[in-house]
Amino acid sequence: MLSAEVIAQIAAELAEADREHTVIPRITARWSEATIEDSYAIQGVWRDTQIAAGRTLVGRKIGLTSKAMQQATGITEPDYGVMFDDTVYESGAEIPVDHFSNVRIEVELAFVLKHPLEGPDCTLDDALAAIDYAVPALEVLNSHIELEGRTIVDTISDNAAYGAMVLGSVRKRPDEIDLRWVPGVLSRNGEIEETGVAAGVLGHPATGVAWLANKFHQHGARLEAGEIILAGSFTRPMWVSRGDDVLCDYGPMGTIACRFI
Image (cartoon, rainbow, N blue to C red):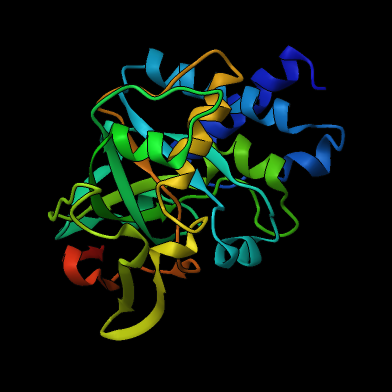
């Protein structure tokens, strides 16, 4: 495992890369002994410095929950990161592309909790009972580590590559709609690029919420009421550039539009 000094050094490098919208060399290329535990420790140091600087944590993202995403990244297990209030956009937003590095879009559902949720034996039914509502969401990926050859250690350290999310306006309680069959048709500049259904995320998009609650229990923590949980993509990531118009149609859950400027 990495020393506390090295963990702090890497967290500082990532914070600088976030400020400057640049990328750093792969952690695993420099410290081949780094473990998944090290990567969450790096993420934790970075998170705590952001909170100390005045940012407000509003939720968690779960990543790499679908076969599409695992195949796109070569990584075979889920991960998670944190989301701050200044990264949340509403549909129709203009998003500055210069705020991010390696900018890509993913199609997801987000869940807002009405009750706390904790492991160790949290099930899908427990997660559904704790969810207030689901809302469609696009995730903007933001990678501060060079992409070629990266591992899950690199990705987790980099806050699971989270950059921002764009939320739709249609909210559904879990008992109002079969969340497994919510579709996503993702277009860039009027051309369909990716399609999928939410069942692609672990068989049910809320399964990841239960997984995360059980993960948190290992660290003596729980998910809190009011948190937003971004549940993972059911399409491959789509690259975007300045000037791109993005539209995603979620069928009965409406659409999300945004433009990158």
